[in-house]
Amino acid sequence: MTTGGRPFAYGGVIIDTSGRILLREPTNHYDGYVWTFSKGRPEGGESEEQTALRETCEETGVVTTILARLPGIFPGGTTRNVYFLMRPTGEICERGPETASVHWTATPEEARRMLGQTTNPTGRTRDLAVLDAALALNKRPPVADLGPGEDHASR
Image 1 (cartoon, one colour):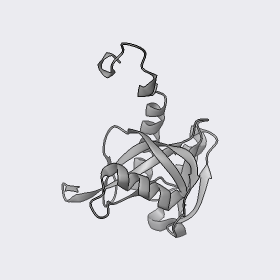
Image 2: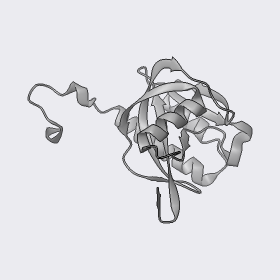
Image 3: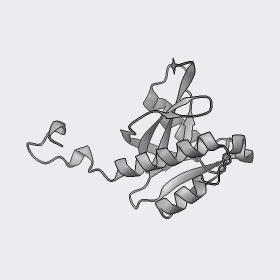
């Protein structure tokens, strides 16, 4: 899918139940990225969600489930990016060669510091905005916690 001449890419921000955030280190710090989030373009008619789940697995080696779509579209150098808040399932998958390593951060501040090491200014700005959006969304109560008689519109 494209808009404004730029294709869309879909990815994920993985935050575990204790609040740790998973970052990936691209192989050879591709395009100036030292640490970043998983993302990529759809293959073979994949949906946004399918693309994000596949890319996250391929680039982190972690199987995830989607909790919610982050609000907004995040501009990158060559793509417009949509991200999903994800939780690890506890399963692993084979990580591809695009990633040199992954790191679970202890705090959001550590994640900001690590993302700030990226020398690509567009990517760094995007990733910091994605982190802020994911952290804000992660603080909201899950939809499954709706009480009796409550609906989404009442929130």
